[in-house]
Length: 64
Image (cartoon, rainbow, N blue to C red):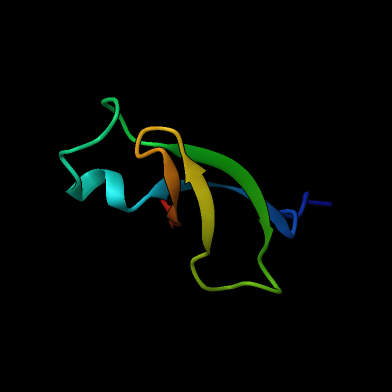
């Protein structure tokens, strides 16, 4: 019997304002690793998280 893929998958969240903002505290892009349930959230995930490079809470979007 073949193994099935799990419902929970690992995703990466990336800061949206780091790409556009040149006046950052430090260089780089803030990224978070988390998991999501495919059945409950089939769309791309967006969460408000703290970005250490921008030094404020910003929206982080799911990337591939």
